[in-house]
Image (cartoon, rainbow over the protein chains, first blue to last red):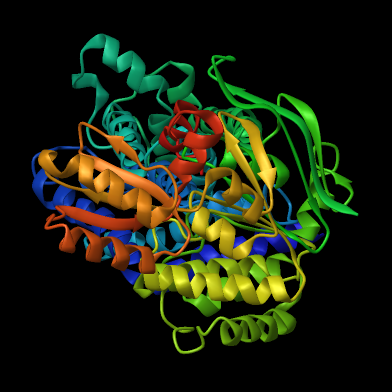
Length: 263
Length: 327
């Protein structure tokens, strides 16, 4: 029980940090909202989707997934910063549950995602996003997004604990996350890509997540996905498997790294 | 009763190539202060990290307050306080927020944590700054807050890793004042430092370490006797060296030595500034103009020079550790 209490205290710390530096919250919201507006108005007119409601219906799930994917960078750089300042040492020398610090951080980052997704959803609605599915499915879609962000947050824990410098972490995470989100069906059909990239994009977890969200939000997603392959036919199942696999690998690795990070 | 025992600790890095600790043993009697004195890279931080459960030794054993550090790290964490080289507090949060959070993590409960936070802020003269983010604090204030955080549950044994490194003289004085108060209160303290002066001021006993080994141990008086107190130093033109050697020897009452390259004449003295005054007077009446003159207190380098025959050097192990951001 005390472990849960410890995690709660650390999570609260994360939230307290957000209220003390509102810039973090503002900028982590402004960036995705900016993406929504740019993509909606720059590409929206020229990409024909054959979809009622236009490009924005396909775009929103893409941007949602991209945004939660960046949780990886947030978690990683936050932890690397804590390491640098010796905070991790302090926490590790306390009589608290040894995983509380990392678990609390991943939960705190997920709570931040709730806020960001809410704001993005509103921005999307303003520019014409209208999910056609029922409320239950839309809510399920958002739950999926949070779960995906949470899974990636654990990858971020390992990256943050392994890195030598917080700025390096930030850069590395972006270098990894950007191609992953663009080599996908998030913003444009994959059918225009070279064949090898198509193949990659099809199996890319970002694509399956985007496809899963589109499905849950009530779209007939065939946006570039090569019909017939397992991930494009079963995006929900594939995404779920990805998330479970990511967590099954990265939670134990991260916790081990945390406990032994100083040997 | 020994509160801290480290026995034959070995810790290597880079697959054994760098020996950070080389069969290091030390102990601290309950209610006393031991200062671990050594240059950067001697292994000071490594010892502290092992004793505070942050690092496992390759071999050897250690206990704190009678609890085995390797077998029962959780129990050890309940009885220790640690304040590291870098003030490990959340910069964005206020001093008050930090202390309350740590209090809660020590399972004091919100109400008790608040009471304790206010007590500690008061005690360390931080009440006025309590509601300001740490990033607005001076270096000295940060260290005091960090120390306060390590005292939340009145630890049985307190570890301070270079508590004044990087502070300006005023911050250092303030920190010494705070530590002296603690010592008067009877805490068992293990403190590491690079400054002989600091060890001298705060510790009952000093362990000098070099390349992962204790090379000398004793009270500060005993060590100083070994090193030989203050030295009078005079630099003159080449033509005046011979005469100055005589004058310095006369003032000191000991044989004076000469560094020919620097034209630096020096000799041990026990009267400090009086000797300085005397030597200036004698030089003046002999018509000798001194280029530089001063009384030098024994530094860590002097301790090292006399104990090891070599100057204190930075060693790789601990620097590597810093690079990896592990402190």
